[in-house]
Length: 319
Image 1: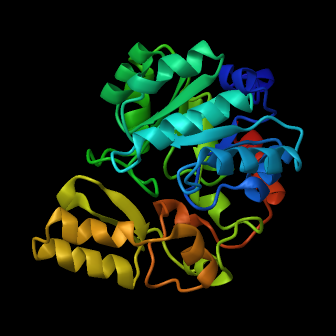
Image 2 (image 1 turned 30 degrees about the vertical axis):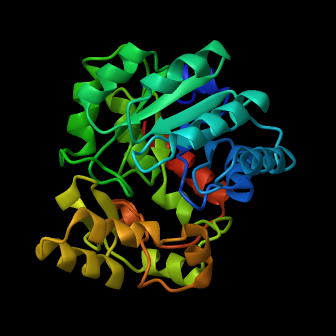
C-alpha cells in the first residue's frame, strides 16, 4: 500500500478525520465522554441516540460533546423494527438543527429517512451485513457502506458469513467507499481490511472496554478475561441475531429458544433491559453484554488515545 495513502482515503476526506478508524454507536455507551475522547485522539465516533428517548436529550448530548471536543463527530440512528419511527424522525430533526455532518444508520432499510438527511447536507453511512444490503443502500443514496462480518458484537445478521468474504464480495459490487467492521480490534486486523480495499475500519468492542467507557469495571474485566470462543449468538430463533458475551443471561435465552419460546417470551427480556443502568451496576452475569469475537484479542483496559495510537502504530508497521 502506498505510504501516502495510509491515512488518506475517501472516508477520511468525507469525515474530515485524521485516521481511518471509527467507533460505531454503542448502545448505552456512546455518550459525550467516550465520543469526544475518540475524536480528540484522531478517530471518529458516533453518539448513540436510541437510549436517550427524546430529541431534546439528544441535542443536550450533542452540546455536551461539543464542549469536550472541537473535532467532528456523528450520530447513530437505529432503524431496528423495535425503534419508534416517531423518535427516529425526532432524532433526525435534532441532527439537522445541531448541524451534525454525518449519521450512521443501522438495523433496517434507510430509504424512508435518507432523502431528508441528504437534503440537509448530511452524509449517511449505512451499516449492513451482506453485499445485497450494501447494493440496496447504495441505490438509496448512502454515501458509504459499513460492512459487518459475523464476528461482530451486537447484531451481525443471520447469514453467518465472516468479514473478509463479505468484504471482498461487497467491494466487487458497490462503488461507494466501504468501511470494514466485525472482529477488528488491532492494527493487524485493520491492515488486513485496508489491504483488501476497505477505506476505513470500525471497531466497537475494543472501545467498549476503554477507560472512558462507563461500563462497570466488573463488565470490562468479564470481557478482558474472555476468549474468542466466549461469545454466543442469541435470538436466532426469531431472526434477530444478537452476539453477546456468554453469561447467565445468554444461557437463559438459549434455554428458552431450545424450548421453542415465543417471540414475546424472548423479547420481554430485551424490553426490560435498561442498558445504561445495567452497565453501571456491575452485575456482569444477568445482563446483555454485546461483544464480538475480538474479545479474545483484548487483554487490558487502555485509554481511547492509547488504543488508537497503538492500533495506528501496528497498522503502519504492517503496511
